[in-house]
Length: 270
Image 1 (tube, rainbow, N blue to C red):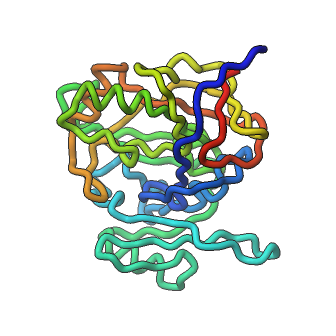
Image 2 (tube, rainbow, N blue to C red):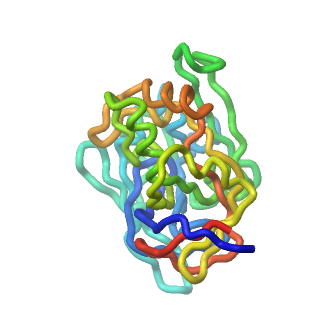
């Protein structure tokens, strides 16, 4: 099948602890579990056994004020990842600290434990606020995660700069910052509109090695409206996505062939 070069990698992001802010990186190893180190950990609510998620900001109102970055790998025999979490007050703690659970629980006001394995039936809670444009306002819902992972639906989330520009132009009063949408891969695209909406069922090739299967558009939720890292709370972000593109922004993808991706790599649509 002929290929069409669509752009280049503008940014790569990973989120070592689920639902915390993550880190921008220049290079990443991609496996069938996505970018190396992405969603390596999550917090688990001790009372309910559910994975903690910023999709329920009523229960976890400032989770996105925490930031996680990957520090290092232990030796191969232990093969564990260590992340550093920066707290909203500026303090920090590493995931292998013996008092990690106690300190994070105290800051969140609810008992949590750090987990590196999701088990066979991980679940999260989401919340639809009382917004006039959502189908079921002021309600809590449950989402089953793919077995053994902390991903909501797919191991890679990809979006284009064209989509971001389109939304920003539609609502210039809001800040359509990448941080609100938590992509793994951002593709620099010179057009406009929502180009990735038509990619479902196709393959994306990145650089010389990596191929992704585009599964479906990515539906957005209240997380896009939550204040974080200097971004204000803004319900109009989600309102604009619903109005302009049926609630979708970006696409979800699975890995057909792994390898290494770098900022600046060419991207081809197959």
